[in-house]
Image: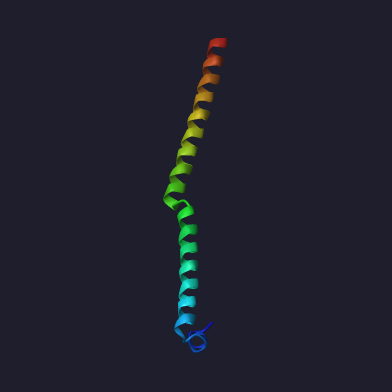
Length: 73
């Protein structure tokens, strides 16, 4: 809708209040959706922590394998 078309169709107070109510509900819905999304920085931190944890697990396994091999000889 262009600005002119809705203003000519909706000039009474009840119509404007109804329109305002619809806009407010839409804004509340968008805000609610945004709050449910994790912040990009939080996502990055989680990914970094997961990668570090995975790297530590891999390092431990390499160390175990190396020690096992060393003591088998």
